[in-house]
Length: 476
Ligand code: GLN
Image (cartoon, rainbow, N blue to C red; front, side, top):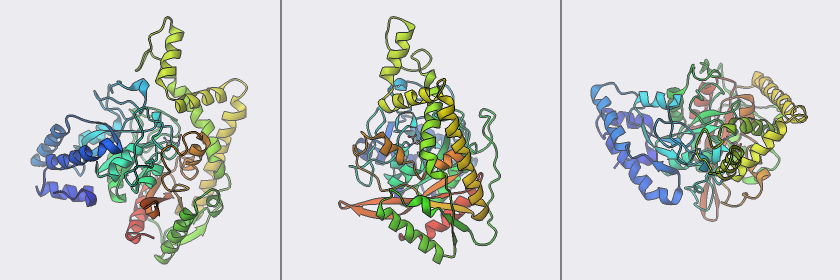
C-alpha cells in the first residue's frame, strides 16, 4: 500500500527509482481513491481512460534511465487548460464537448517531463467564482465537510489534492483561484508572477491577470511543479524568464498590512493570524507594519477590469467558431441563442458588466479609472517591498462556507477576493499555506495564510514557505 496521505514528489521519485513501486502502481493507487471518493466530492469532471497507458510509458522512461523528477507523477488538470484531443469545457455548457486542438505550453512541458495526467477537474464556469457553484456540471464538495464549498474557481483541483486524488494539480488564478480554494481545502496554492508561466493554451478570462498556478499538499511539491512549467514562451508575448532571487540578506522581514486586515474578517481568522505572527516572531522573523492604502480598492477595481477583459475574451464563443451552436433561423439568432443558453448566469453578468464599462461614454468613467487605481495598487506594493521581503495576510476572511450560503449574493462572492485580488492586479507572486484548523459543527475546517513577494520572488516564497511549514507542523 502506498501511503498517499504523506507522499511527496521527492519521496515518490525515490521509490520509483528504487523500484519500490512502479508508475502503474502509483497511478492505480490514485485511481482507486478517485473511484471511492469522486462520486461524492465531484473533484474530477473526467478521469482519462488512458492513465495506465501513460503510466506504462513513464515506467519505460524510468527503465531507460531518462526519467525526470516529474516522470510518473500523477497530475490533475483544471478544465480550462488545453490538451490535444481531450475535452476541455472550462466548466461551461458552451464548451461541453469541445476538444483541445493543441497542448497548452504547461501541458507540453509536463508531457516532456513524463508526468501522468489523471483527469480534468471541476471549476467555476470560465474561472469566474469562488466556490465551484458556478460550474455547469455541479458543485464540488469540500473533502473536510461535504456540506461546504471547496472554494474556487480551481475548487476541483484543490479538492482532488485534499482527498488524495492526485499528487499535484494545475490551477489558474486571476483573482485568487488557486489560493482561496487551497486555503479552504487545507493545501498549498501558488499564484506565480504574471508572465512567469506561459498562458498559451489556457482559456482566457482576464488576460492581464490570468496565470497558471500550482497546487499540492506542501510547498516543496508546488516548487517542483512551478519549476517544471515556468519560463519564457514564444507563444505568449507576456511571458518571460524572471530571475528567481533566492537569498535574503540577513533575517527575512515580513510586512503586515494591519489596517487592511481588520474589517469584515471572521474573529477566528484574526486569532489564528495573530498566533501565526507571534510564532513567526519567536522563530526569529522580523515583523514590520506596512501600509497599503489603496489595496482596499482592489476588489472594486478588479470587478471593472476583469469583466471588461472577459467581455472581449468571451466574444469568440458565438455558436459559430467554438462549441455549442443553437439551431436558429439567422446569424443574429444563432449568436443570441448559443450564448444565452450556453453561458451560465455569472458569466452573462460579467459579459454585460464588461460590455457596459467599455462602451462609449463609460470607458473613461469606469475602465480608465479602474486602471488608474490599479497603478496606485502597484505603487503601494513597490513602496512596501522597499521595507520588507514579503507581505503576510490571511488568505480568506473565513473558513469554507456552506454550499448555497452565498449563491444569491454576488457581492459577497466578490468580497471573497479581498486578500487575494491585489496580487493579480499588481502581477505579484503569492502563495497560500495552511495555518491550522478551526472546528465548526464537529468538523475540522482548514485556514490559510498568504505570503506575497516582489515580481520574480517565487524563490523567496518557497524558502519562507518551507520554514513556515516546519514551524507550523503542529498548528499555530
Ligand atoms: N473570484 C474571482 C472571480 O470570480 C477570481 C477568480 C479567479 O481567480 N479565476 O473573478
